[in-house]
Length: 487
Image 1 (cartoon, rainbow, N blue to C red):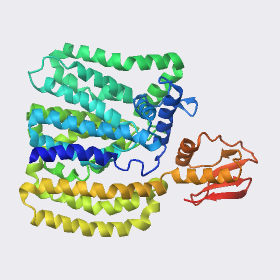
Image 2 (image 1 turned 45 degrees about the horizontal axis):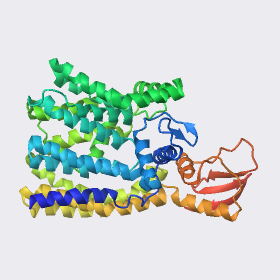
Image 3 (image 1 turned 90 degrees about the horizontal axis):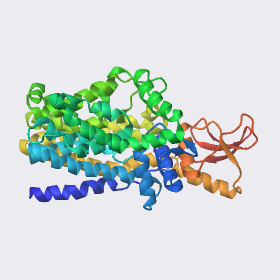
Image 4 (image 1 turned 120 degrees about the vertical axis):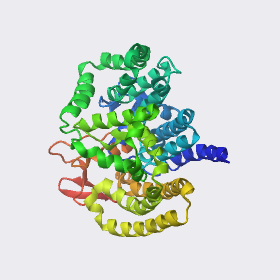
């Protein structure tokens, strides 16, 4: 029976990740940029130099762009070309993660850790957006998992070469970041440090050719932008590059592991250190959290490579914290209405603009959460609380996903506005349009769906595309509003 349940999950979970991936248009400023670069690679055949609307763009290495370009070559378009490779990477890693943990810890802990990881808010959300965090997290985590047996047992004499391949892919996903995150392997190497040399050389052989070819094609601007500005400057100063306080990742981690966060209260840190296998995951998570917290430039997605290690640590403490485990399904149900109602508005216009829906959503959510919490505490047996929690969280994800994506498509994506604008311009005979004072998110999203829109000169009589004070998209000629594109 248990084998059938695992087989069903292996099929259903990838299906859930792939379900309705195109229900929302591209979001934020990153998805349209990355999707445009991947689409350009497929169209031009230039897989070396990333170009954003004809201009070389060096903020990120190419792995994500190659994935999007490859999906485009296979016939996928727009949102599906950008997001399907990410969803498949995530689903494939979860299966690999379960299998590796099962070999080391047994089926029970492997199932719990994989379930916690797959249903955590951060991992689930990032598995369906076209940004660099899942490609980095998957390639880096595969490399770490392949290194696990060598690090903590005597059965493997050498660090597997295949780990070097995936470290190379991680370097193609986020440059120097995975190199620093992998430093705990030196602790495990000890006097065996020579056994690390061959995989390191293999990682260089995998990642090095692209860096060399891109440098040859573009010269110093490539090094300056990728390494000096988006690595060194972001770590040291964070100026204009997402500067955040030292404690920033504490609430981010709590939110990213939601609704499993309460389980952390039962972690026995001394026991983790005395078990070599668990110490591996503790060092993986602890060093990464420290390093990323010390960096001045921070974004929530940077935490994702640490989530597999955190999931294992949480899975070890399930049996010790059965009372708090009942909070997991209650929290999931309580927060769902607020997330569905507030997140689309908050992403589009800021959290303060979403206050008009915040209170009702919290009220309905808390009522449902209290009911589920009482059921978990009173009616569900202690042994089945994890299964009940997992089933509830999965049900919440199934219910919330289409509602959330629908809200995001209306509030936080310009896909509908792009279609309406294209129709309006067709009726006007496709006049020349330039972009004026336009919100940054709309600037990138509209240019993805409509093609490059040139910036307006300081004084122009041409038709200008702008954001109105109320946030709507308008066409203006001089100071006169010419047409309004409704949300």
